Length: 405
Image 1 (cartoon, helix red, strand yellow):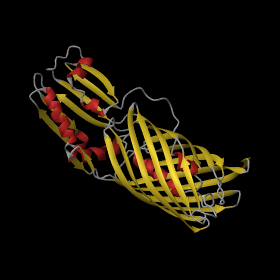
Image 2 (cartoon, rainbow, N blue to C red):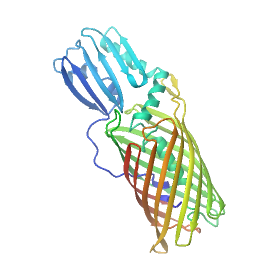
Image 3 (cartoon, rainbow, N blue to C red):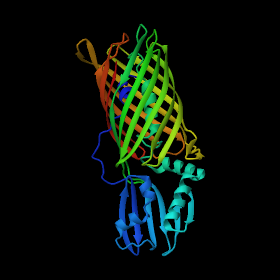
Image 4 (cartoon, rainbow, N blue to C red):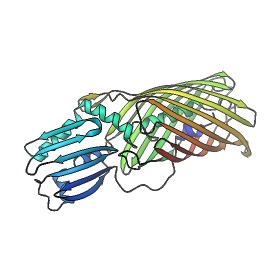
């Protein structure tokens, strides 16, 4: 497959302006009065019943009234309450994962400290919450949505392994560096308790390719770095991976990839690291002026054990991803100097089995345009492209740019 633009630039998603609302919506009730607020930080959301926060909503709050807070925690409903006036009893209820706890300190501040310790130091809670989040949250940083670590990894692995059978390689040993920058956005549909949300990401994909003495025989080191914002909340991710491509025939390439990946966000209260392994096939047929590539990939992606403070937990998130595509390339008849330009159109289907995700499948159609890499390998390759992604609870417009040097 000739999708160098996807290799070097990941995905660039074009959509409407960001909502000004935060990720975490809060509705509080005090003495019959109802107030709503929104936070960009999970920590702020959990501390919503602190006296200073409540006084900003209710001028008559003295710190002793009964109060109830309904929190939409990225699609997971949470209820925090001081159900009785003049008491320090604090209740926590998360119905979707069966949590119903109470905390009673000497003061309400002490009760809230007990709540925070419980949230951080309970491995069963962390396991259940992590698995529920990738299922119902449109903006979980680990899995379940197109801007999550798992989804980016699947797309990136396939793009690296699906480079066209006649489109890359050299008759002599040759090395290439790849660099790109991208801006990503996707829009989720309102579903369940999750509101419509928009996610913007910036990616710096870095690659080094060691090409051996026949076309498409390559070892690729891949280091994509990512930064995502969701209504003011921030997340980062990074990966280090290896891809080995071996030509079975001149028009058929088999590939294997493995990587260590990590993502985290204090704002979104999500973090984890992942191991993955995948296999792919890229079979191309056509003529000198056009080609059609049948591309297939299967990969295994598992979130590993993590430690939060002194608490070790294992969320049990593991998925097999199937990614299949048809890719058509055609010479444009134009050139930049002695470098011919080509059009490439593609349709790709991605599906996940295993842990249930917010988006279990996506389809993507798109087109790219740029220089055509020959078997003799030029010094540079540049491509730009556009595509539309749609699927289970999500949709996105994308624009891509990338380069090999």
